[in-house]
Length: 241
Image (cartoon, rainbow, N blue to C red; front, side, top):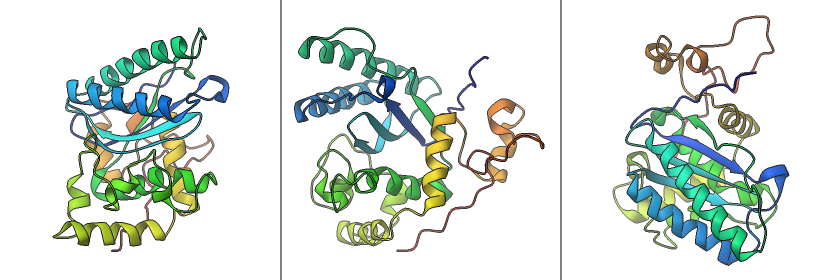
């Protein structure tokens, strides 16, 4: 069966997931994580991809990023994957594949869903039981958005800036939003949409895209299993600061 094409659009945010093959660890140490971040900082600049949020887990990582063109995201991820695997294999005296196939990505409609997706990304370590608070995990962008650390790799999205007129206001609003946690329907929504390459967006946003990208922008026909997480119709709870 042919794989479903991804819907990647210029100047729109995308939620990206890359997993280890057979769920194997892709990081054996903090040095591994730091090296991937160093590569990510370089390849995002080269490809002019704005990175808004990230989290590095044990056997996968998440990114939230906006590419300037449809192919810039793929170029960035290919460069990141090749460079990291070569270094990782040499360092740990291993060979062969590290990744579970290609990276997964789902388009995110910014105005409605970006901040919720950022929260989903940065709360991953808490949901996994790796730390009690998001700021306790050093391998995510949470500390940046909470004002505890400045990360040069992060490009703050305009919607994050809209949370307040000063850094203190924005950080306080973000902390309150993070404290609300991730509702179960949001967790299912963002996970499944990224893994299946489907957009998280409203009908109004998707309608102009249906003709050019019918396989990924249109809703599935009736009679097949209903998947609210990938049909573009789900509505997330509004952001409240």
